[in-house]
Length: 133
Picture 1 (cartoon, rainbow, N blue to C red):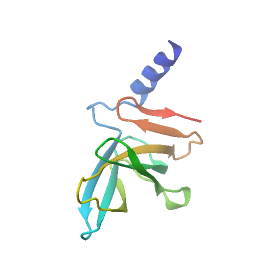
Picture 2: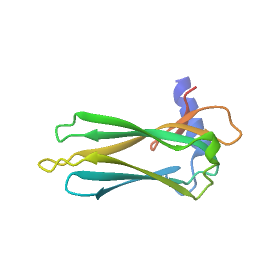
Picture 3: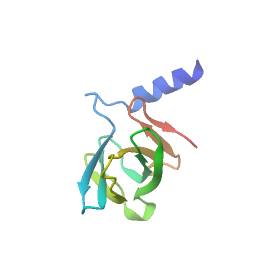
């Protein structure tokens, strides 16, 4: 019960007024050539805080729902500066193209660290940021 109250408090504390996701994640697939596909992951910072570290995992999933590969993407390191509110950052990864049965791709945020905050958070669209360390 205490955990539910804590998660409710975090949702209230970090929730935005217009029901907009705090981190908006957009995945785009682009064909590079006949054998490769480029997956572009763009993250928009809709929170009111500056993000100094951001990374996550891009999953390649086949048509049966099995994970084929998992690749880590680091968007921001501590030396890269910060991602200010209402700004975005993007990266891409190239995968081999399965022409007979196209694969599906999903991205999950792994770590988020805010400027002047030593704590590490992760993000879920339903509940927002929650502390993991």
